[in-house]
Image 1 (tube, rainbow, N blue to C red):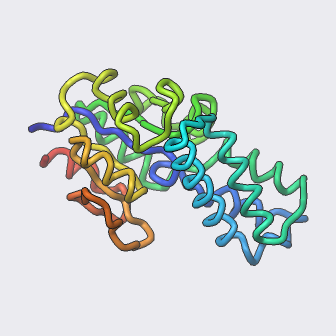
Image 2: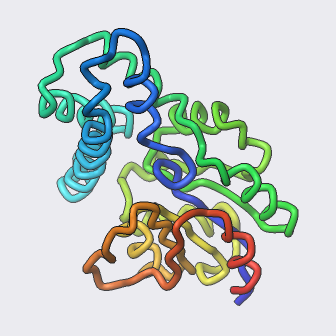
Length: 228
């Protein structure tokens, strides 16, 4: 079945979630973060995701900005950091995450090939709008879909349902791309064609579904989409 729509997770897939901690660590006055920012960034992201899963199974939804703040608070406490100014700076930078270097050209190539493009994310609409505008990729995205319209986080089926409701077609006409192995696995089980962007070289998650395509970055997505 020909791919008609390419859908991307946002955080960690198109946008570099480590950028906030990395940039803050390089700023004067944040020397306490300089030597530990990679661990803080990793802890922040892990807790952010864990809280989405726990809220989903507990039917205790909140928007992604709340779990983003909760995750940062846990990561800062674990690192022994108690600095309200630093906390606010990290949160401010999260609204301005940079895109990975290959993202603009990759999205432009998909559009040039006549494909629909979009984001499907746990992020709140306001957060996603900030990231898209900051990265300058709004003109190569047809839409940005947030879980807030269904009130539950990924990998709930109702989140993946949003794609075909918005873009039409069938799940096997969608190429879904995520840097989260669990997200790519969930989308595979849903019926999408999938790619796991495994930038860190992590092991495959032990789940009922395995994404059939694993890449180290997004550069060859247009080529892959054209072959499927």
